[in-house]
Image (cartoon, rainbow, N blue to C red; front, side, top):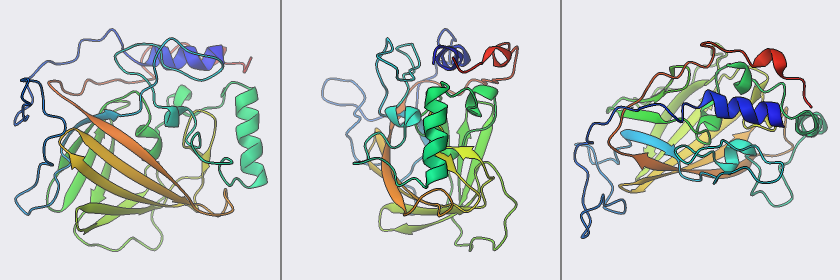
Length: 270
């Protein structure tokens, strides 16, 4: 686990100097600090506004403990769900035999085959748990999610369009959403085969349908309830809630994993 854990540390620019620029329209509490529990911002149409900079709200502390994957550094700790998305599932996830074997093998081999440590794009589900900031930009017809890692992006269409019957397979799939009261319900299909949802190899296949229920209960937090329906990898659908915390007074900085990369050749799974 040392090699994979080191790469995760090395790929996160903990010593980097992010842009420092005051975030506009931040409510203040009685103590003058940002009012993170202030009311939810809303658009002119009256819908919750998800715009802002976000980072996992379930960061793990450092230093590493036991045999868990951890990103070392107090600035951007990693979520337990980025390590193992099924960590809180009673009895574990409902893996099919091949999927359970994949996870077992990757744990034994310290995730040496992880697409993330090989600089491949992450799925949006995994991005919610990684120590990399995302910027959400919301318009009436489109929600764009910009990921600082590898300059990745995702589009969620808000214009009521149906999902395509046979979309081109991609890392983030094809996403269309609708509002149900203050919850944005996002349906996504069209994923590439062989994707990972976490550091232990929990799979996502090309048969997957993913539903997110995104809420902003207050100014400083997002709740993302994710349901995975992937009959190739699991015996039944399963759900996990991934939290996000707002990041203030900064902007995205390019973080290109493959730039000056020298670690992959040394990953041997020991």
